[in-house]
Length: 205
Length: 95
Image (cartoon, rainbow over all chains, first blue to last red; front, side, top):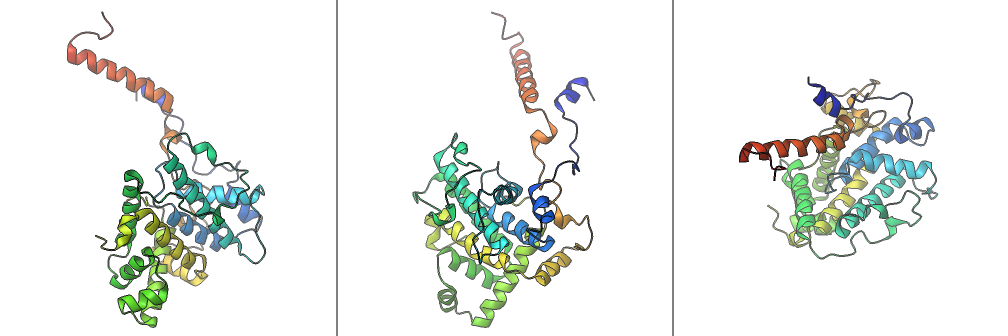
């Protein structure tokens, strides 16, 4: 290897640095979450990372959400489980990144760690005007979800109904699916989502 | 290809699907998670199971983890300059 090439290559990072605790690890050590909760949260983070700009990964969403709880910038309301609460923060972060994409470059600094606003109560999409790039990314996200359930026609009908904003009853009556058929399809979908969520493969279409 | 009207507003459609199915993941039971891991051949009892990537180690590697991007950009610029010299047969900085 030439000295020039060596110069541009940083030393390979260790996969695990024992001197630094990652936010998820800290939350686990503090008993805020269990190991199974971590897997739930990882699946949720991977799920919400769909359609996000390339510089944001599921790991960013997850660690950022946990960090906000650890530093106290977001406080867990009573009666809400930690997983549901962290999922809500990730949803807010996703909305915030989408908003940043709409605002264009330079808007990144709007995402502050000490943000006190409850983003989950704000509308996820303020400006519904289609933007070609964002529309393309969202279409790709939808196509990737369709591909995930390609072998399950009932699941595809459910996804299409959810995309239209329909309720379970409306989807069932519209697609002629029985209640049992609907419930089993949702169960199959959950299993597929968990399988996808537990892997570490690239989720971008 | 989707035929429904949500194609007009794909961002809204995607948000609806993500939000609706997020609930399923929040309420997934331990048994369901173990079952899904089993489908993938993962053993969650193992300390170093791949399922736990993201807990102690980063979930994904990025270019700056391996390369000094500032140096890389500088070298790319130099290479571009060399390519120009080769194409024109002379140094583009010579006036």
